[in-house]
Image (cartoon, rainbow, N blue to C red):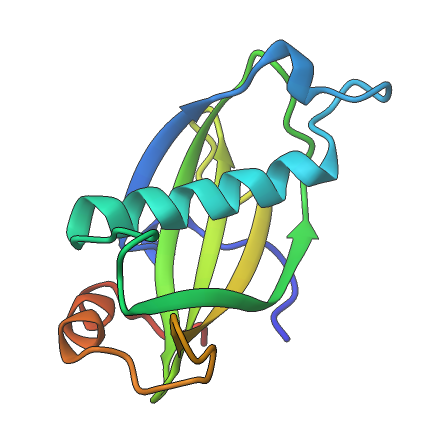
Length: 146
């Protein structure tokens, strides 16, 4: 397990997301649940931009089987978050995303998360090898977590 934040150069693709007033909790920073929402949104958006993802009609879907987050610095409204995304593992049926949250123009992550998706048959709900086109897509943003 890595300790400490990552740098922007460690990520392959980025999305900018403004924070909202209601993202803050009573302690004056983004509630931890908001971090997970940002992670999930960044992954879904990237997949939708790069595939023909149609969650209601695809024969193969992905499900989250693991996630986690390391927090390094607080993020608060009205900060703007740049979400960095990379793939750190491509398996037969699974893929591991790492997601970095960068506050405003910071060069290091305020938080780093990971999501593991397993690809399953939509009808049988059993794991199955992901489509080759997905493997190729994931390879484009693969970067070892070191």
